[in-house]
Image (cartoon, rainbow, N blue to C red):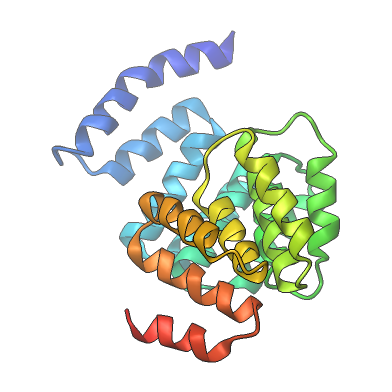
Length: 239
């Protein structure tokens, strides 16, 4: 009941916060701090951290996160701060520290799994296949988390040149929804199989759903996985 009342009081302020996104009548950070104090909702705390990072910098956001996590040990605080460290500072170790801190506090939710999945592709202390297997074994996660795990697995299989298995992962995704990265995986495997026409079709479909810069990056990565570093370099130089 208390939580419901808090949310009810905060509701008009949420509307005002939304309006301030278009018309800066009030300081959005100060406004969401008020909303956070009223609601104590993890998503509002995440909003505080996001706006703090944007307006005051990543160090200020990290300090605020430390304060808030000591009072509200929510998984979403750790996950948000981890992603902010990656996005604003490219600091994988700082993101990893937030993940570990959340685990030590017995936090467990989909947002942490997403962060762990990302870190598993970049830090040697994680086993990507193990993280993917753990996620895919669960049936209580959002579709996005499952999809991200499958795409990560597809990239891992391409890197290991396990082409048939990578294609099977892409087919599994495309059986449920259209996805440009799954099409990219099928582009790589089509080239490997010598089917240039199918490869071009897959790449064209992917290109309609992906920004040009991102598409070039994936194409270059694909050539690297296929062992053609020179072709990958040419693609990046065309940017």
